[in-house]
Length: 254
Ligand SMILES: Nc1ncnc2c1ncn2[C@@H]1O[C@H](COP(=O)(O)OP(=O)(O)O)[C@@H](O)[C@H]1O
Ligand SMILES: [Mg+2]
Figure 1: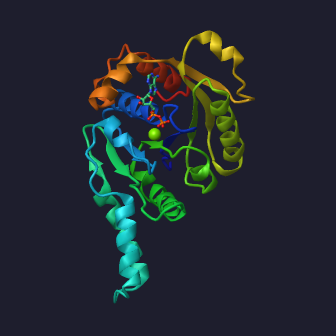
Figure 2 (figure 1 turned 60 degrees about the horizontal axis):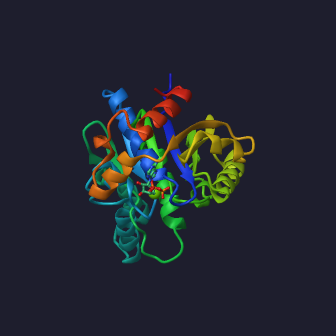
């Protein structure tokens, strides 16, 4: 039987906690499944997942993509096809092996404005390497772009993250609308982060999107943030860990 990896991705407005929640998911998966192959992808050009996971990033996907483009432009004797084929192989050079998981980062494309080329490459990368893993967690860029560009096409579990703001909810509903057509997800839902109290939830309009869970403001996270330490140091009793554990249970992942 063909094995299909579980691909979890976070999406939502900037600053709502996507990177923090993605990092905590990696931590929970690593702890629950020490024998499974887990991959964390930092797909946000703003970068952040590496710090949250305590990874020292080295080579990024954008470095590799640039090398390939340069080789082709400099009229490298080899056929462009070969250079691109090599770029595929070089993907594995970007992978950092950590205790219990692998990590790869998209990097910061320098060409101002448009990330479309790196997004096309990222999509290719995800389909190339996906089958080598059991669980993949993608920390996406804020907003809708990567959904639109089908980078998230292979995502099986789409976690829409928002705070309790109307703007955050609007972004989540917009993303869901686009994802319904462009993402082949099995499950989708909202995680509300930094909720002042549970009462607030009933005033939030999330449309028809199921609520997967909610997380209060968590001082543990603030403290780790301050020190620049990874989420692996956050205690199991922390609201963000308990909250995400409940979300993963609800999705039948843990
Ligand atoms: N539940 C929470 N409690 C306290 N601080 C939080 C919480 N969730 C996120 N943060 C903090 O908010 C900031 C933005 O979070 P981040 O995960 O980087 O958001 P995003 O990736 O969506 O931009 C970070 O400093 C993070 O530590
Ligand atoms: Mg982020």
